[in-house]
Image 1 (tube, rainbow, N blue to C red):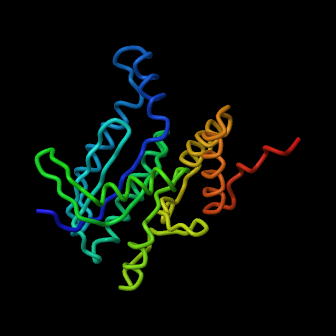
Image 2: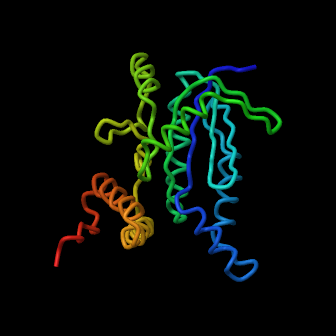
Image 3: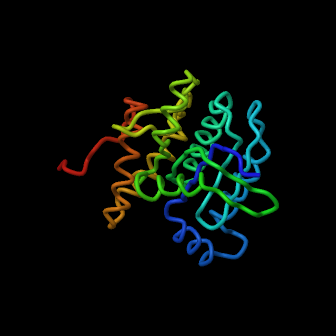
Length: 218
């Protein structure tokens, strides 16, 4: 039966290069394959209060859905936030969209208007390593005074604030900074701008971060 669900569509950035890296490396020493598989299994085994969710991954796409209930959005957004953060610590940036709509998933059969809307947000708006909430969903939840603790603001967009409530230690901050530098040094402008956005977000959340803008400095 088609019922309303929260639906998140997430896209793994640089996925084809990750696959190429694992295939060209020594057998049994695949880097990204094991990280993605471990995080997929770990997240699926987690319990988020009263949240009943499904997590599906195929190729570079991740779909997370849960029955629509405004009271469970806090748990849903926390799940997305923690998943995005853990992926980042493994050198795997994502972008995506979250909305709500009619959705059905059972026995590997998926039929969903919510997924189409979430995909369109990811494809047309996300651009950087950010997960954007649809304006309709945000306005609906805000009107009901729902806890939006894990929602932040990026200009006119409402995004998952994946560094919320995170106490970045020196090691994890270095991991993220190294990823930012790697992205920014890419010759492709569409990739380097993703690193610049991530740097601005991290510096906003952690003003003490020593990774500063150097592109126009001597």
